[in-house]
Length: 114
Length: 111
Image: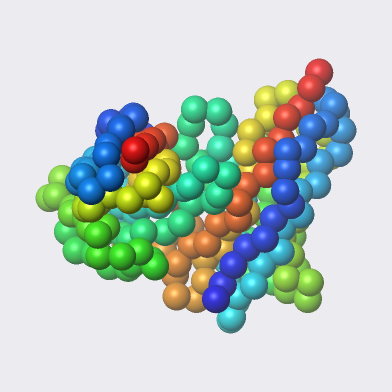
């Protein structure tokens, strides 16, 4: 049983560019949440997708957007990249929407903006 | 706003030593509290949770008690092992169903 998978593992982009990160949830899960973890910090909630809609959003600008596909996988898009967007981006999956007690995290995508 | 403050690391202990990692929170209402662990190269894993005051969460020898009067959820283990070396995150889920994480505490256990 595959857990949560994320791609790519690492990514280097230039300021102003756009990036797309991908996440496949754990088998049986239908809800995907995205987090940003800056170096030395804890994860910060970006948004959650359930039933192909954004259900909740943290304090992140509109440059951060996402999508969920019918197979429950999800993408995180970041436009007009800033140096401060450099971080580890974590995807977490769960079942049933809402705020789960049990979230399964992927290993993350390390984004570096130069 | 809601937040979590946890003890800064890094923490280095000898095998079989007693572990305490302090965590305090600020929240309106009655949040649920969690400890997550991140082993090197892996994603965060839920270690234990407590959903109401005076609940004790426990797993793999780790324990934490939800103390409303002191707004704390300190993580403890009586005898750490080398395999416990990881980064530990305290987190809360507020009444608006959002998660807030602390900054993490790195633990290294030496034989």
